[in-house]
Amino acid sequence: MKSSNATVSPLHRASPYEEILQQKDCTLEAALRPPRFEDFTGQLLTIERLRVMTGAARRENRALDHILIHGPPGLGKTTLALILAAEMGVKIKITSGPVIEKASDLAGLLTALEEGEILFIDEIHRISKTVEEFLYSAMEDFRIDIMIDQGPNARSVRLNIPRFTLVGATTRTGLLTAPMRSRFTLQTRLDYYNHADLFKIVRRNCALLNMRIDDAGAMEIARRARGTPRIVNNLIRFTRDYALERADGIVSQSVAAAALELLEIDRNGLDEMDKRILRVMGGNYDGGPVGLGTIGVAVGEDDHTLEEVHEPYLIQEGYLARTPQGRVLTEKGWQVIGLTPRQRAKDELF
Image (cartoon, rainbow, N blue to C red; front, side, top):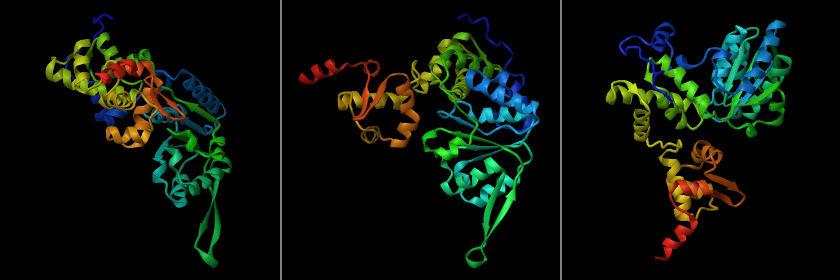
């Protein structure tokens, strides 16, 4: 790719994102979020589904139906909820599952909503089962029954709530109960992004940051971002700092590669922990099968982090596989650590 498309705006000028921050007093992450569907890159099928739902709701002047967005972290679930509110022209309240501990917490949120407003619950699978049962009637009948007092004085009070839209986000759909899942009109999944879509995101966000980068540098960042826009933003910011400090603020392919090598992220997007996992499996356990707990002890990381952060990308890219007996290295995984089963067996003989 040619470098003639690099942004050449002077670094001392206020960048668009800095103006946004000054006007809205928001975070950098919020400033980089796409505000509308047309600004959102990738996830074409999900975007088309949401366009259909928002268009129909606007035509009939009604609240949007309930939506569940699921998929790995960092792919844009919160961003899509904000876009839905913007497209519908309504307010949005944002909370998370662990915060809603009691039915009274949920009642306070729901009764404060306005007609047509969106309630976005991140990590909705972490809502307690007791609170979840109160959501059933709220989502279907737009009312909740709460108990006041205890013992002989206990009584049920019915609260009517405005028609609202619940947008739930989760990284673990399987932890949601079947009754909860069935109450969402649309259940849509976000998948990891390909390099072409990530390249577009890099170019857009670098322009907002007033960052001078050529196409080769943008592709270098996209290639190492593990298919995740949130990681793209993190890599962009570090690469920008690296370029300002060591390359006069200009990001080429070699500058981007040097910056990301400093973060120990290789050309395949693998970080040091990823490679440590593969080396342990290959060097200590003949490539598996080996249990997740054993791997966790060997690399000094807890099972949950391995399963939620590292393993999905390693499996998706074909470096390891799950079997009923445990995790096993694939041929691609052996190649990354520079060893084959036969070579290792031969080395042990000498």
